[in-house]
Length: 339
Image 1 (spheres, rainbow, N blue to C red):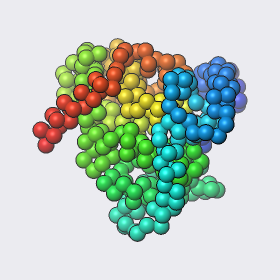
Image 2 (image 1 turned 90 degrees about the vertical axis):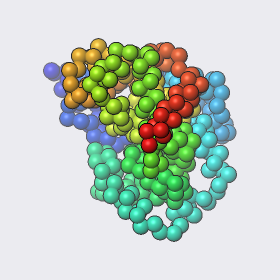
Image 3 (image 1 turned 90 degrees about the horizontal axis):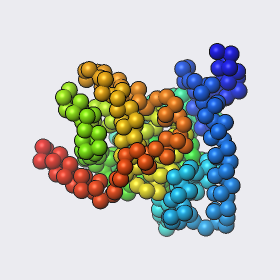
Image 4 (image 1 turned 60 degrees about the vertical axis):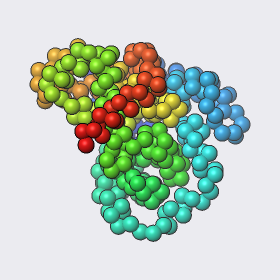
């Protein structure tokens, strides 16, 4: 108990991104993890600094992919994300475009929808509070408004606020956050945030098919209780694990998401389910299944982000983009046939 108290004194109550640690935060376990992770971070930072010498754009390559999987230091994250996602190229090709969007014609419904979600976005983050100076709510509003004007087929959809909020915390730049949001919503996650959310619904079904193949007992449990995948994983997909997994773990996932695309989401989901398969299979009701799916996103397995990221590339086994594309086609066709 005493060591936990000492750890509480040493570990700041507010994390490096401005989030307050929850009441039940395990300070001692976190301190133990972070002392070893800090050594890894320092080693990676030295390697990244060598790799990024000069001011050129970060390009995708085998080396960059290997480095990204091992984690991008916070000081380099924005530059790496911008480079590998294609956001930097888009920004360079469209100078002044973001500012023009902000000055575009008013759309009351869009503005109202965004404004409604402002206070619900990260109430536990001191930088998003009205009392903060500068308050990131205004920055977030601008990014979402510009995106809604840029992509009128999507406009604004709940969940985009959390994604854009993380982008702002990492880039500290409105314009870079906008172009990264465009990379995610426009290219990496097709149709997740459109009004019909067909891409999102499709990918939840794809996960169900992958579980059926790789973890049939879990699929049988879900079928037996008539639980739809959307009930337990929709927020994983919509929020890209924001507010579900610890911040540092989410950012490590996003490192790979920007570089390798949407199949990373399936790797994370499958790893969470496989690691906790026995625990999930003890569920005896729909409510119990839902509760267990919440439980598996907490604890040391997800906090220890470095080991967790190693697991997502080993635990689910082979997962090619060709397999995902094939499953997407069949699941999408099934959803469309259901109307």
